[in-house]
Length: 285
Image 1 (tube, rainbow, N blue to C red):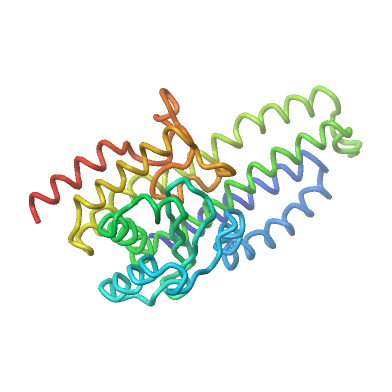
Image 2: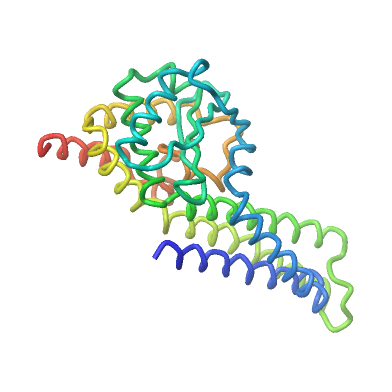
């Protein structure tokens, strides 16, 4: 099922590029966009994890540099019976973490400097167990591909904007002026909605699943619940600087400040509900 979802997302990316290419450059634009989409699909599948890590300036760390983090990743990956992922630290004081990679054999776990300072050892283990559950459940490929696709969709909006500013397509068979303006407005409205729906479709259910399987893996559901509460309380007041909406769904807690009605469109389920489920799990365990 996850392979099918990944293929579907890449198909959506291709169709969107072709559509925008036709809008910007007629037939020649469609051909160019199709070739570009093929290249983008290749890069997305093989290198999207590296792109996301580079976006957040994540640096690989050794056990000497981050002993608690590396030891937790090593121990829990052994319990999960998966290869040990590479370990990265993101240089920001805002607590958060995410996992990425196209398979358990090519995975990485990234934690912020802030999360290493804020959480105690049990809470950190709970967070890492959550992220390794994404790796074991093979969520990371589709999540990282979705991040790259959402980023590409935002890029398409910029392409359409610049095309409109500089006159757009020169194709004689195309209308100019009002057609381009209406087309740009439609793209500007629909493209972010498509990106948001893609992220929401794959994100909310997998967070619940990773919470439960992570809590069972480390046997510390209350520690994970406590970690979620701490991270959420900081994220609500101090959104992560430089966080990109295209990659927000990768993190254990949304790094962007979503308040009021925006919570309805968040890529993450309500933290209160996640904590309640973990507390119920603790009683069962």
